[in-house]
Length: 306
Image (cartoon, rainbow, N blue to C red; front, top):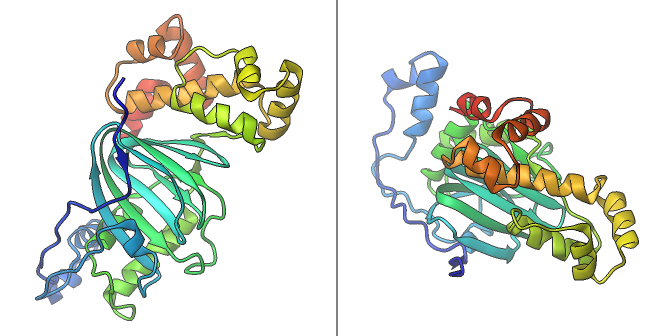
C-alpha cells in the first residue's frame, strides 16, 4: 500500500487580496445574518493582506491570535509535532483524525478540535480537507480549554474563524479586527464538547499499540494480540487498560470502530457499506450501537449536521 503523503504544515495555497471595507450603511444593518455576512467578507481597505504561510510563522507573531488556511489531499498526514501556542483546527470540508498522548479524536466537518499549547499530536486527513487553523497564545483568554477536545462550532464561531483567516497578520488590536479576534476567543471558551474521542493509556507500551490500532481500526485485534505487541501478559494488559482508560479493551475497540464509522459516513459512504467495513454483521446492529453511543441514528446524525 502506498504510504500517505507526509506534511510539515507547509504553505497555505490561499492568496488573500484587497476587498472593500463595509460602508457606513453596511455597518448599520441590523440582524444576526447581516453581521455574519460582514464577518465572512472581512478584510482591509486599500492594501494587500499579508498572510503567514507556515505554522512556524504563526508562533511568534506580535498578536494573541494568528490564522492560516490550508487545502489538503485525502490521505495526507501531519506526523507527531508540537506548537508553542494552543491550536484550533477547523475543517470546512473533510474529516480529521487527531492522535495525542491523551487520546484519539475524530473531527467531522463543521466541528473543531482544540489542542493546548505544547500538546504533541498527529493529524490524518480523510478526504480532501479545507482546513482553517488558529494559533492562540495560552494567556490570551482566561477560560480557554485546558485539555484536548472536539468542540461544537456555532454559526457565529464559524464566521469568526473564516473572518480571522482574512485579517492581516498584524491586525489592529484596538480596532474592528481586534474586536473580531476578542469575540472569537469568547466564543471558543463557551463551545460545548462533542464526545468524539477514545482515551489513550498512559503506559507507553500500551499507548504505542493503541495508536497503531486507531490508525487501522478495522483490522481484527484481540486482547492477546495487544498483549503480545506490548510485551505484557494478558492479565497485566486487562488490569492496566481498565485503570488507565476507564474502559475494557473490548469496549475501547468497539468505540474506536464507531469513530472510524463516523469518519467514513462523513465522506459519503453508505450506512450498509460502513457497517460491514467496521465489522458489524448487519446494518441494523450497527445502527443500534451507533444510536446507543451518539444518541441518534447515522442518517439522523448527518441530516442534523447539514
